[in-house]
Amino acid sequence: MVGSEGVVGVCAFMGGGKALSSAIVQRPGLAWRMSARDIADLARDCPPVMQQLLRYTQALFVHMAQNSACHRHHALAPQLCRWLLQHLDRQEGDEIRMTHERIAGMLGVRREGVSVAALKLQREGFIRCGRGRIEVVDRSGLEKRSCECYGVVSEPTTSCATDRRPGRTLRPRRARMDETPPGRGFGVTARGSSRSLAEENIPQR
Image (cartoon, rainbow, N blue to C red; front, side, top):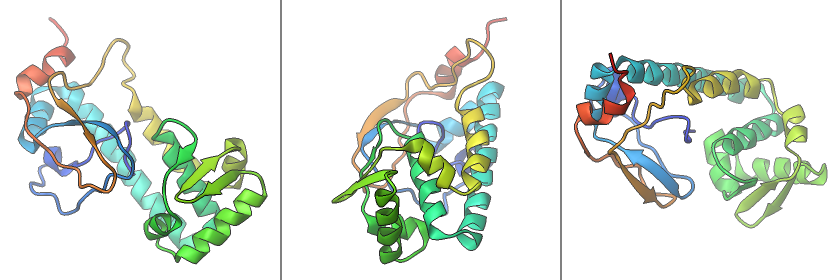
């Protein structure tokens, strides 16, 4: 799960070449797009950018490892609470537009199990369910019901969302911002040289 705190396609700057996996957009929104060559050149030429990318990659590895353990050892209801909280952390608003079937596919469980767990959370007053959507009405309640995995993966993700050095913004200046509808694959296009993209991120000496 990737939001505004991260990137899709870490293999581009890790030296892995062609990506071995794909990404699916779950909700509409805006995203920066760069070619694999440009992000690799930018990471090589601008150490602060590479440091930020590596911090996010480390957080991503923690996320993947902890989620795998969570799927193996924890009950579905705490897993669902964790998933809802992680989704909220990466979007604006309290409404998640997602079917139970899609959530079940991401958790690796049956749709009926997600529906039963969601109905129980709704009866307890934590969420409000509708057709193809879930509204969180008591976030603190979800945090109490969630397993400890939410806290484990949230800390490194939050720490890398913002550069800790004051006045530094690690953001591409000329990358194209496109709106991608949900359900579509996330493409990558070239836009600008690595030097021009890194221009605002390199301190003047």
